[in-house]
Amino acid sequence: MTDSTESADSTDTTNRRTGLMALAWAWVGVPFAYGVYQLFLKLTQLFSG
Amino acid sequence: MPPAALSVHLAIGQAYAWSVFKPPLESSLGLSGTQSALPFQLGIVMLGLSAAFGGTLVERNGPRWAMFVSMACFSSGFLLSALGVATGQYWLVVLGYGFVGGIGLGIGYISPVSTLIKWFPDRPGMATGIAIMGFGGGALIASPWSAQMLDSFGTGTGGIATTFVVHGVVYAVFMSMGVLLVRVPADGWAPKGWRPSEAATRRLVTTADVSARNAIRTPQFYLLWLVLCLNVTAGIGILEKAAPMIVDFFSGTSMPVAAGAAAGFVALLSLANMAGRFGWSSTSDLIGRKNMYRVYLGVGALLYLAIALAGDTSKPLFIICALGILSFYGGGFATVPAYLKDLFGTYEVGAIHGRLLTAWSTAGVLGPLIINAIADGQEAAGRSGPALYTTSLYIMIGLLAVGFVANELIRPVHEKHHERPRQENVAGKGQTV
Image 1: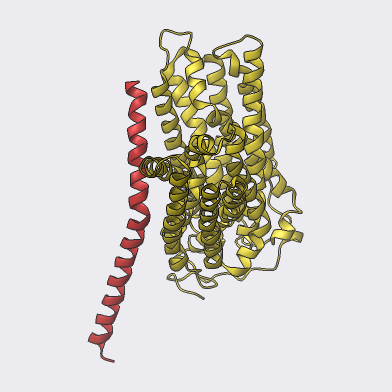
Image 2 (image 1 turned 45 degrees about the vertical axis):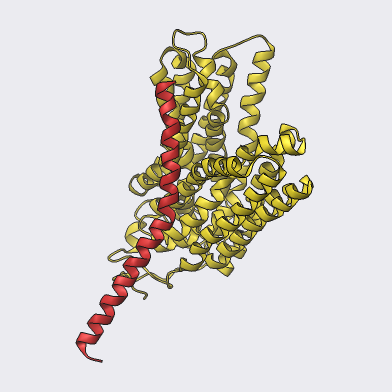
């Protein structure tokens, strides 16, 4: 295998890993953000109630 | 690894949103409040028991197996409950959500702990703080989501059963991401430039290993059990009665608190609980676990004292003190796996953590019992306002003081309990050695 092929493979692996990381964090981050948003809606009652 | 851990903890954290199902279950199946609480109560008991007795299995079979078992139990618990509601057999709901689902809670709670500590030996407090913050966040997601689903499907038996089926399926898919992604680091893995011997410069941090069987023979385990139990009891004291407490404290003043504002106060406490899990646990990596618990227990007692002495004179003072107490409550949960790792090493830290969680089950009974019994007694004696809670507050201060002493008594584990000499990692670039 040539150096340039190895380098391309390594870049591919890094890109795949970054994509997987982003997907994994979005998987848990989106529902969590929904929960925190709903919490803030309730929180406003403390200052308006 | 953190998203894998979060996918499990965010799911099983749903347990704290069970109250959403109580009113529709009561009206559609003709249940009392006590009966409708049974699935949750059994679930929490099973959490403690399965974590205690399943911890060794989790260590032996690994986090993927544990997360799969947790997913299977938690999801099928919902599906069994759906069948129970649809056929009018409430015992199936108790068995499904409480017993089967409860096993999923316990195994799921401890499933990522040991692996996270192994991936992040340099920042174990932060790593476990993220996961255990997820458990707090689970109810934040489930509470509005479940309520919305009941609105859509209806609050009759058909609507509740459909809601349970959707929960079972969605949580199975959500948790499967954790099952697929979780990885155990290779033996001897270390973050770049990190040396275990350097991390062990603090007196309580060991590089030795203690098995779960030996750990429960040490005084350190029981002292830490007491510390966790008393810290949780004190936090639950506020959490359990937060809404009526703030209303009662300011009922006789010129600044009464409305029911809507009390609900906002409860939401604020949830936020403090969650933030404490991540924030304080991460701080413990910097200042050490023993010092962190000195803050939880010592400053916590002072905050309780401030509420008891002057809580009804100032709303901001009351709110700030309650927030501090709740953040320490969350922090106590999240910091304990790292404390165990410091004392007993990483060898079977998940199993030891599982056994320690019986302190949580005990506190879950003790805290509400103290605060409810005393408030009811004071009310029967004709008292009102802050007087309903004063005695409970002083009891909580006493419990925190006992916890503080227990924390002070924690010393390094004696060498006779060490499992085997541990091979020193040759610190490298995140590679195995």
